[in-house]
Image 1 (tube, rainbow, N blue to C red):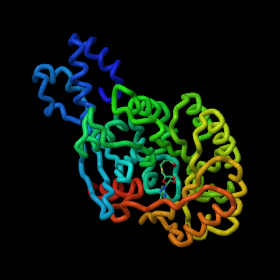
Image 2: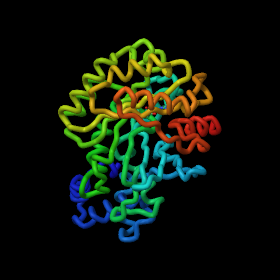
Image 3: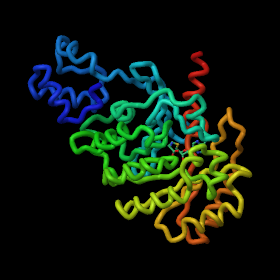
Length: 342
Ligand code: SAH
């Protein structure tokens, strides 16, 4: 698919099929402006036929708007697989939360995305396609970038789809493209240690976010099966190495689950573990998932938890909950749609 290719690669593609170079620029412009093949006005039908097989066929299937303005998009790909992405409006611009896989195989007990396992990886172009389609929906194009920030916190484990995800980062931050600054891109992972080291080698300026959710391994393993594979100490060591190498501050996500990880001891242990490390903790009250039994800690308790971390010397905030009325937590909406389709 053509969205998998960089500008230079699209230029070689048109050369290979015997077209002049400027056709490459036209095709690139159309793809980055989120146009369908039919909507391209400066290519003849004969030419469109030649590139039809390779031209992207993803589309926005549905869009739900929350009371708070958050939008949830359902994107459908050529093979009929669907993913969700979520658009959030902040003072400084629009942030898009993209999916990196269809489903997920990490098995976290609180998460809706992993309920039916992994269907397949997304290609770099399919991750980028989410950005291009939503950018267009906001009235943007190649030359008019509406989306300023990207977080890879939708469905899927980004580091379990390493090659596509890194190619996506290359594409979306390319000067000849949407040119989104790597400083405005966050990658969230449940902590695949070897891949964190591999990511370091890329020397990106992106923000690495770790889904920690517990301060001791046994407790983490109760909700995150990946904890049986990598110990918290190994993850923290990788984060410290990442910080040393890239100078980028690490963010930790800590989703509060009632009676599981929200006690005073949990808080103290977390503070002790991260003290002295230049990082930030995002405290998130669990977004309850219908199919799951885990319950949320109250927002008030979440503020207390974060305040306690701050009093103990950490940088911490409670994440604002957005789009709750439109099944904001990743994977929730896809599951609902899959059920209604079957
Ligand atoms: N697989 C990656 C990215 C996707 S999940 C990761 O694990 O980081 C993005 C974030 O949302 C993670 O921190 C994840 O733990 C959190 N999350 C998933 N389901 C949630 C829920 N129901 N409520 C609150 N946070 C949730």
